[in-house]
Image (cartoon, rainbow, N blue to C red; front, side, top):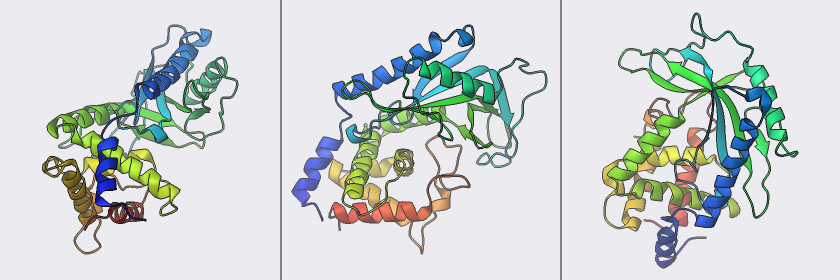
Length: 303
């Protein structure tokens, strides 16, 4: 199936806007639910916990059919640190000397957060490796992933300033470092530079990916991966001509980056500009990007 030029332009015009006020209210209820669970839990009284939305909703790149919300609960009194030779990978994870000596280990914090969440929703699923899953309440709030995490500080390396993020200790004994604050700031700046076209293009490609999955053309891909792809499109491409022209240019630029002959996908970065888009431990591969971009190009009937 291919869209006609008229259908494509109509869809792009619709996709440029974020979800409705009603959808935004549903997402806000999810944040209030998690905040209430943490604030009213007696074992957390007096702790430095930061409850904050992250991901698509926080960055205003969510689409109505993809409106699950990610919320982090960050323990700020125990900071981990790491260092890296390149700034793009992490060779070390440790507690600084003379740091926090209290009882809240990653395991204890995860267990107690599960208790707190079950105090507001008996349906909490604590079996996932990274986050707690809270099912949606139809007509009230969307499904929610709640991520227990600790403050993480990357030490300054050659050519790379110090940066603060979070580290998640997974149930299988591994850890994941995230940089949601840097993603938020860099996304806002790029959106300003492009006259709001950056986030338009992210929402458009997410909506297209949803269509392609429904049509059986590709497998479902993480929403964040799509945001990463558009972040690597130059501002000059996103500001060129009409919305249709700009989006065609964005897909053309990315397809060139994934070309077998002259592309260089290894140079692509996440919106935080700290991590490479393709590195060990990511949930996606270069072939995922290549398939998505090719399917989107033909679906939109470009070229």
